[in-house]
Amino acid sequence: MKRSHLTLRIPDDLATALDRLTESRGVPKSGLVREAVAQYLVAGKARHEVPPLRARDFMLMWDALPHLTVAEAAGLDADLLRARSDLLPPGDPWA
Image 1: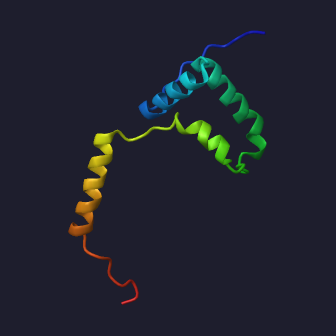
Image 2 (image 1 turned 90 degrees about the vertical axis):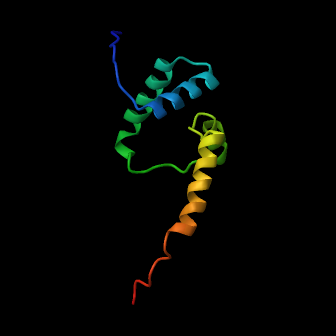
């Protein structure tokens, strides 16, 4: 079987998630990407039908998802508190 070489560019957050997932599974990036492409192509006919995400599967994916650092979370909290006091309440849309 002939093999093809593919180079692709992905956003930093996706690259970080890919790194985390490959580390947690102990597989190379190329193997994981090959698996994902195969699943995508096989499911091509039913792509509009997204199967429900089971809690067990979500737990397995959790570590690979991007997370806020402590500093980022504190900044978000401060922004939300500031927005509560700085933003005017919404007006009545029916007035």
